[in-house]
Amino acid sequence: MNLLIIGGTGFLGRAVCAELVERSGAAGGRLTVVSRQPQRAKALQMLPTVELLGADVHDDVQLAGLVAGRDAVVNLVGILHGREAAFQRAHAELPNRIAHACRQAGVRRLVHVSALGAQAGAPSMYLRSKAAGEAVLQTSGLDVTVLRPSVMFGADDRFMNLFARLQRVLPVLPLAGADARFQPVWVQDVAAAVAQALVRGAAAARSYECAGPKVFTLEQLVRLAGRWSGHPRPVVALPDGLARLQAGLMEWLPGTPLMSRDNLDSMKVPNVANEALPGLDALGVRRTGLEAVVPDYLGGVAGPARLEGWRRQAGRG
Image (tube, rainbow, N blue to C red; front, side, top):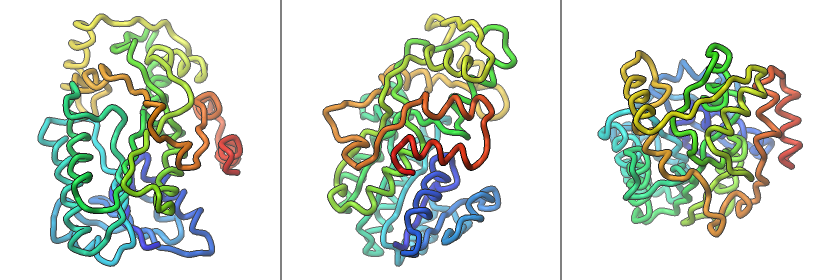
């Protein structure tokens, strides 16, 4: 297949590209990954059949040229921080632009990654904007598959790794949203779901909730990160008022915030799949548990053999 991957240089994008290249094998195929700063995606440059292009996907003319001639488009764009206009631009306006470009070019197949808990009446800008993007695509007239993952874990994640790092340097970890519920999913399982959605015609015009096999509270996940990294620390759950104050102060620190008030608002919605709806199993992807993967990368186990072991445990070795 001749595929365009939008947002392919991020955490999920790198896993999706590697999965698609591996699956294509002797059958060939071509992946074009578009990024504003392709020079930052050196890992993808090493993958055969992957072409990195520098472009602005928010520019309709450039986007039309990128979409033309493709068999399918995969949209992985997502942001976790910003003002409402930034969320709307990335999660709602961009899917609308992509759908328009696909219709103009006669490209019917689109796989779109949204988020678990996305709904129009959600308490956070992040979840509302994700829902707006889904709504746009549902009326686009295209063959759209929507994947809605929970928080993703993997060797380069900014979730379990973050809590492990914090416990290496802090004697006590004050934690906002300690009771928030998550059903973490391995990034490789979501990448496999993207690949499966592309080859399964029955997956078109459907939504899939992508979550792991177990539900955890945030506090439980933080404690596991400390234990598996070898630096367990006492965890102190913050009351709502202090949690919001902490998140507000973090928004003013330079760099990407560790936590924002909008993140806290998102955590008011359980990040848990509705098991009555289609999930990874419906796409033929066996769900991989946190304990099968995270202890290795938090504990410092490295090398290609680590990934092979994970793939065998996931039934894809």
